[in-house]
Image 1 (cartoon, one colour):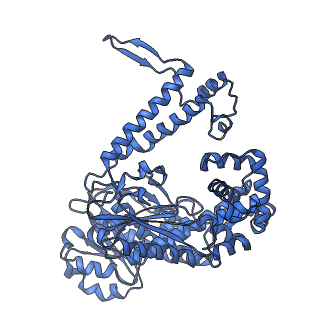
Image 2 (cartoon, helix red, strand yellow):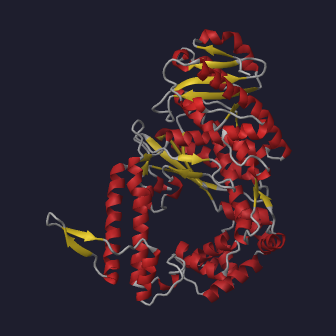
Image 3 (spheres, helix red, strand yellow):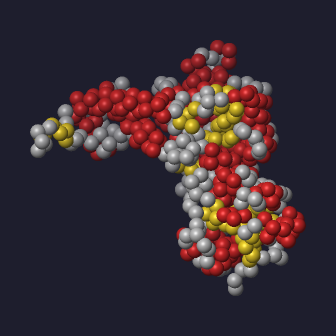
Length: 581
């Protein structure tokens, strides 16, 4: 049966429905656009579905700009706005100057329900089939939405909005049955912030980026020269034009070739990973190989592609965030993956605030250790945080048997590796490698074994938590905020411990982003990026210090909402570029 609808081409066409729209508890919102980029394409239709009325299809080409104020009043009102993949519609509305709230995203809800028998896929046809047992035809989605619209297109648009309204009822009940309402509220609150991050993007200093690219190319070439000294110079042959051509018969990106080259120098390893090469770090071949890999990855993953991703309209980079990017709840990112930007100051210094603006950057202090303390109920760790002790210094004192006041900088650095490695059950060999590769700390295998033994003796709550996970081998788990996930039968201790900790930290960050989105609404301060435990804002230079306080408060409020025993701390700074934190 066709979905009844009316088409509003002028603001006055909407007048008979305004009282009902403003009083509606739930409005399903969908849109049809002329493309996927809110900065370069336009919203053609905006469909509103609500109980006991036909779907209202607003033709934005003729309805706007005169109807802007009434549309803003409806969409920013108190009714719950139901959307599928909300960030897409929200980005086009944000371009118009409208920020709907509160939002219910059927796609995000379905992703949360996947661990509770929900649909395997979260696109609209899959959800309609799973929850309503209906087939949804999306053929018209790719039709031309720029010219005169056919009755078939209008009927398609109306049905998509109407079906969202019905889908909301079924999915909302499923969230309630599985006790996922609270975590869904965190995700729904965060989607506005994710929209902001994608829409506003980050500003890249292209001249600095080019200099960094040239420098990294030099580092790569210098490493290649050393590698060729071990493998023999590449062959050269003469082209038809008489010029010499280099024939690259030495593939340093091939694990098989590199392993053979290493063996020729007496380095026999099972693989060419950084971990397996750990014992040979002083060998010039290994040093050159690692330097080459580092430079080559930086060039291929970041330095070469990023400039090509600068938006032609905004002049900025606009990453694409997947809000639930992992089963733990962590976000992922692509096109480009700004979350994987090297922490080197040279890279981060290229992400800048425009003239007259500042970056306000904050990150959580030891968030995963704090979450682990909360989950494990380890009293010594909890009390250390309550008393604002330096946990790394405390751990160094406990595993070395010396007073905290006598701990050296090097010992504290080693304790970082011990803390962050052992909360997930890392073995002694793993700790030895992790300390060297992540913190530049050399420790023998015997030292690693001793540190590991003393760590678990010092923090018995962590040890008990690990033993419980190993004994029970849980098939399911959840974060402190109630997110659920499923473990495979052969899941190891590290993943059993890491997933709820990492997931809870992600929940905290998302709650903070949702709080910020509300408090920054209508201001000239934008949320421009989030990287696991870090949030970046861009604001006017004149009020940057006040925004830093606001950011710190929002992040700590989110942490202290989810962690009941361990205080959560964030550190904020004002800077001209990302390296300034």
